[in-house]
Length: 186
Image (tube, rainbow, N blue to C red; front, side, top):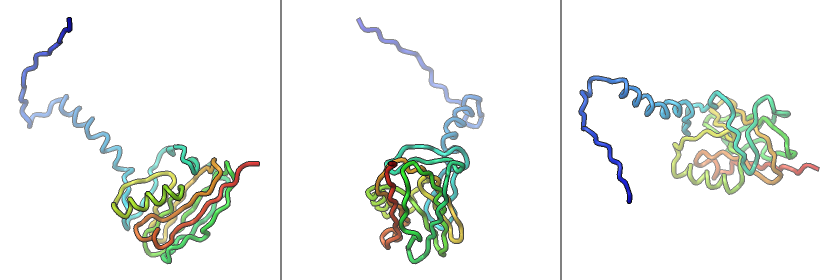
């Protein structure tokens, strides 16, 4: 025999102008996720994008994992210009090496650097074309306003061929891409 439990409820229509502790607590709980997300929200445009303060989110990717700034053993400056090029456009890295990629925007428009696999970057570039104001901020990307610089600190813990690119619509298509060769440990 199955038993059904029911709870009798009484409809109560409180005065909407009279805040109660329960209503205030509910509003605080509902607003908390939004409030926490606001400082991290980043959109493409002409405004400067900065990294959110706090601990680095370390998620293993096929091209490596984020690192803390103090872990960087070497800094490589990558210049970005309005001719839609990176200089240098090729990096050689040893497996396990942690780099600070310092992206310097020498142009007059916003640029970014995003590292990943060719497939990831092509997929992301297509999404950016469809949604140019898409919000995101990951440790493997830096959005850099004109005349500014941004850092990515990354441990390349997987050997292989990877890329970096500016995925702002039009920039990727114009050839703003580079390559990273990570050689295996011997």
